[in-house]
Image: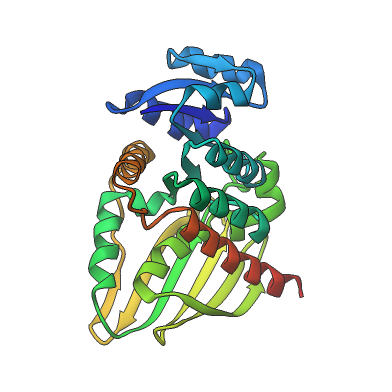
Amino acid sequence: MRIGLLGTGPWARMAHAPALSAHPELDFAGVWGRRPDAAKDLADEHGTRAYDDVDALLADVDAVAVALPPDVQADLAARAARAGRHLLLDKPLATTVEQGRAVVDAVRETGVASVVFFTSRFLAEIEAWIGEQAGVEGWFTGRAEWLGSVFTSESPFADSPWRREKGALWDVGPHALSVLLPVLGEVSAVAAAAHGPGDTVHLVLRHTGGASSTLTLSLTAPPGAAGAGVELRGASGVVRAPESSEGVGPAMIRAADALLTAARTGRPHPCDAAFALRVTEILTEAEALLER
């Protein structure tokens, strides 16, 4: 499969480009970015071609990987899907329900495959743990903490305009939801939302199966307090998600594997654009509560 990369920022350089270049079943065909000089640098680094015109890249590939801000990603993803290109996207899919739905509609109309890179869902140990816990009945509560220090340490993502605007809710909230939803089930309501220090937010969710969950999300935690964890409590006791020993590279390669499989079989992946749209809907509901 010939695949192109849209985006040239830190995440494209750190995760997408190395994985696309290393994957044995992908032909990394080119890079397009909003900064042509950065696209050329990244393309040269991986021995591929830089494109000045995004439509020219779309004409030359079977699929695209997108590492762009969510509002930019959503519009280009819908455009690529309408051109018949499979999609390897990043979270969040979009920051409005309308933009996210446009991507899903384009995917459904054209029948292309879509996979959204919720990192934890493609880490082997976490993926296995989620599958195991999803088969257990009687969960009572869940608790997810995703505390980053993006804005309180020297992070390559600290100057990201969309992260500055949307904060932890939209940046790490999708990670927490991607782990809780397949275990506890669909969210029936965002029961409460409150601000904490910095960009920290606390959410309380109700799930259709009867369980409730709480989320604590932050990009402004002190470096010593940063970390992520998920705990479940129910009839079978208390379990905690394992810490993964894998890095982002193997996870991204596994996401590319998932896209190849979905494209070949026509069977949607659990982390497809439709799942990512549901995450966007939940975050939008939470944001509305916070703004009140």
